[in-house]
Length: 276
Image (cartoon, rainbow, N blue to C red; front, side):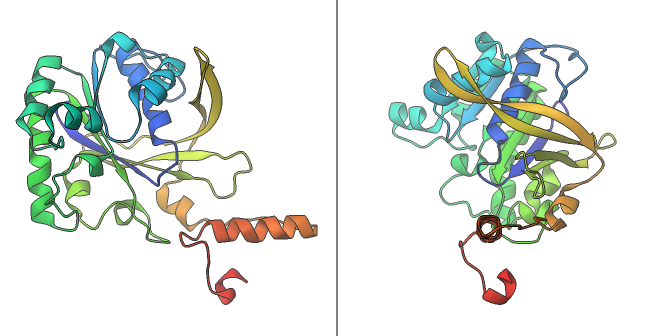
């Protein structure tokens, strides 16, 4: 994630974006090394997290503590809290965001997810509108010299990879200097997830990381942590095009195999010819 620039992380909902982000935040705030980040950072500092979905007290705190983050260096601004205090939704165009970032002086600013902080009149399919909506983030990154990570839900298109998974507007991909894509490995029996570095403007892309999610408990609160497994040269397109392989040996196995295939359909159904 280059300093002074905007980067992008995209994945389907429920893939584990937030749980992996906790590892990233632990690395930035506490210098915590792991399989994801084997080399210590040149410097540690604050992280400013714009949270549009996860509750700081119920979800984020336990998740970040489990990852080893320095909570004294984590600043969280939620869309709900801002609306409760001001009566206005917090958007990327608000001067309040730029002022808060200037005061906080973060090394990393995370917007998760982007959709929660776009102005109501901005359509993601409009290149001009998206370009205007994202300019304030680029200005914050440049002025503060911090890395900005936009987190996005991918779209519902089937059989597509890379930029085609992210949005109807290609401006976000084009503007980002680094792009990461997450997804589930279809043929993993252990729920393995991949994190692929799809675009890198200033260096060679990193090899794809393979990981899994483990349950954890912090201060009596159940949470989860991302655990590094290994690296591979496969990219997002390789995983998307991969077909699920399963050998059915009993009636129960056959039933589960059918349900697994149906689960890949966003509608929960598909033509009988396609299912067969």
